[in-house]
Amino acid sequence: MCISLLIVIIFVTSCGGGNKITGDSKETQIKKSFAKTLDMYPIKNLEDLYDKEGYRDGEFEKGDKGMWTIYTDFAKSNKSDELDDEGMVFKSG
Image 1 (cartoon, one colour):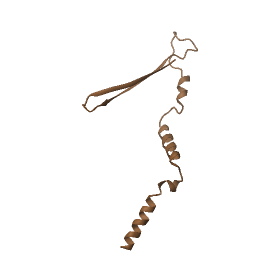
Image 2 (cartoon, rainbow, N blue to C red):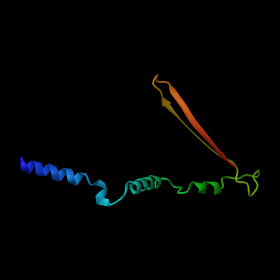
Image 3 (cartoon, helix red, strand yellow):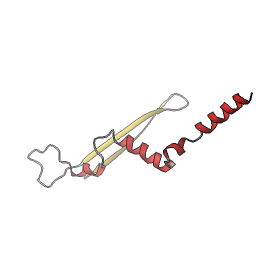
């Protein structure tokens, strides 16, 4: 009985110190997780998109950056199994 109680106490105390082993605060763990997620994307700074130049034909002037349009939407199912569409359009230029 005492041995099993001792094993349970050791197990509980060793499992409870998740942050203590690494010494990271919760904020640091969140920042690391967020940075890891952003590493998947090829563009680290979204402001870099503003300086990109796309295909140009004879109608564009040299300094013209054109207009960027980003469109996104999604559909979600509500309780009555109907699809509800929501979306957003971002235009720059």
